[in-house]
Length: 378
Ligand code: NAP
Image 1 (spheres, rainbow, N blue to C red):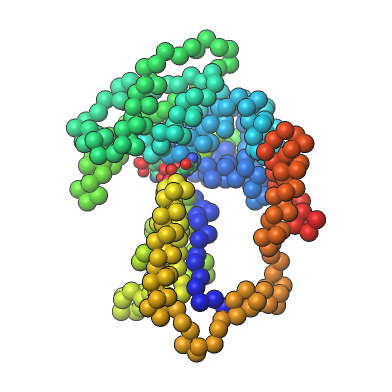
Image 2 (cartoon, rainbow, N blue to C red):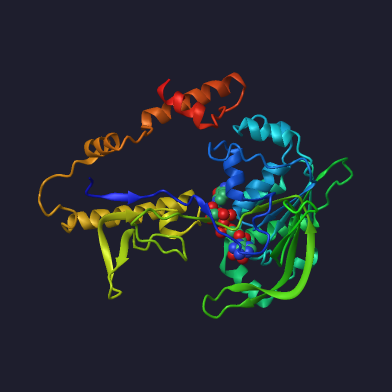
């Protein structure tokens, strides 16, 4: 229907750890948890139990891990003025979680978060930060990494400062954030009832240089320890999902491409450019990078489209114009597919803002399909 189609639908699934016990109750992906507190209608019924435990374990130390830890640890009166979903606010108000462990398989030099986001969580009111000073010792390989990366240097400095700064810790019921380094998840152990998680078994790790990537990777030491908890959030990265018939690299979870041009392979193993089909964002590069990274990524794809257009690669062979939006609308109608146009999205947006204004918040999220779809027509 179109001369050019750009796939930019991101990454809406999760990487899997592949360790025993991963399907026990009380274990969620951080993505599901983020969708839950942000009011995504597919996760509004998730109802994580925040009342039966005082300890949550977050696996991974990227920015998403910091985001979910911050939601669990921030004072409720600060969350009340944000656009967090009402059901999450109610649940967090009753939460008994006081300790959050952020577990990384590598060290503080390799923590995947960035400085701004780290500073935000370190600045959460009345939060006691725990970092083992011994974990901050650096090897010559770490020093090399720090020399090469300003981002890693800033993160490492912030963690070192947090480990040594004087903190007030005599407040009753004070919340705690524990950074745990050099630990990788080995398995999840069930509670007595057998269906929910009660502990995470962690294997201690050390770093080894990986010749091929030049990176230091975590390897197990054969020493294990158990961490008691009632909630686990796996924050080890998102994963894109394939669309039927679309070339897809299952291992990397991306659409194979050359500067945004979608590639497939013929039977002889030669790469073929899928004419008129392009990709941008996490679906193109994998789930890394902040908004600015995606802007550069999109520019590259658009430059490829312009170049192909100038080279006459996008002109249809028959010369007849493609039907475009008109054809798409007809096809959707023919298949009886209900869709939400942009004007419908705008109606939801203004309803949410209006309801938020009455409550002194940026917006009140509509969180179920039953309420969202009528709002489109309303
Ligand atoms: P991420 O930055 O790639 O972090 C993933 C974390 O999971 C890393 O600590 C990684 O450790 C760990 N990990 C991966 N596989 C593992 C395994 N099998 N076992 C144990 N640990 C494992 O991913 P993310 O936090 O999902 O964030 C995705 C992107 O969105 C990032 O680029 C992030 O900066 C961005 N983001 C930005 C913001 C913001 O700007 N405010 C907010 C949220 C997200 P290793 O390093 O050892 O692999």
